[in-house]
Figure 1: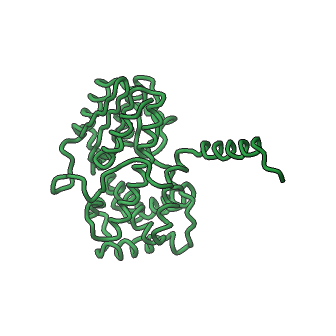
Figure 2 (figure 1 turned 45 degrees about the vertical axis):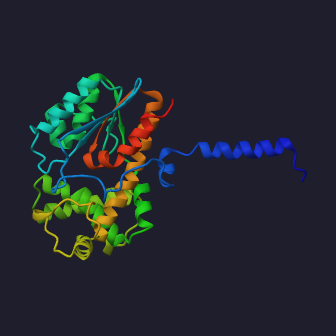
Figure 3 (figure 1 turned 120 degrees about the vertical axis):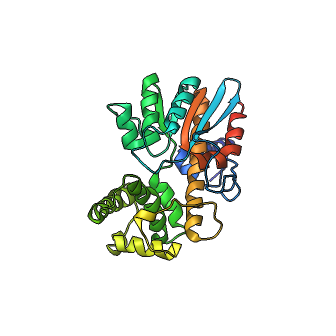
Length: 298
């Protein structure tokens, strides 16, 4: 076949086209796009707390502005009068954003009967939706699609290691906050979490044994060298350089950080003021990326 200039042009155009139609979620699995601080290097006090709750940093360049409220997630779901919520609300109305970025999933179609209901059900995540609705602006999920995060983690860790981390962080910690200590209720919550979240939403295939609470507990105890007990459960410490459990936590957060930064970057192409409410550790590690994003010429 004779290679002509027109054929070369067509081939180049095709390559460029297919590279441009990748979604943000697909791009997130590649090499990091944005600079971040290692979780081993960010500065916290001896208890892992932020300087304040919320800890707010603002990044501004001309009309473009990012208002990031970093929070210490509460351990008691009934603590709806916590000053953290008032702090978030104050920052929100002071900045009058055009779009909100929330942690923990797509809230765009969720409706709460009241602010109290939103706080009791979803804490600061519910509050973001209530505040956004009050100004008739959109909420955007800043978290990567679960199936893509899980696929990336399972390339590096066994299913037992993966479940020990994810179940602890995204189920057991919440059960403790909701004060669910009954073993039967906990087992029911666990079963639903595995089937609906890990397997259905997360697209992770598990054997019958891998779906059991006993399998999770065994792997939790293997990684942390202590018996599993919901009453004494502590949050993952990604700042501890020792331990595979902590290593998995850092990797999970790094994957999520890149997607969060990309989401904010893309929103600033169309909006001037972006209001973000996320765990405060993410703010500390993402600070260099946020500075790079706000400094971009648009």
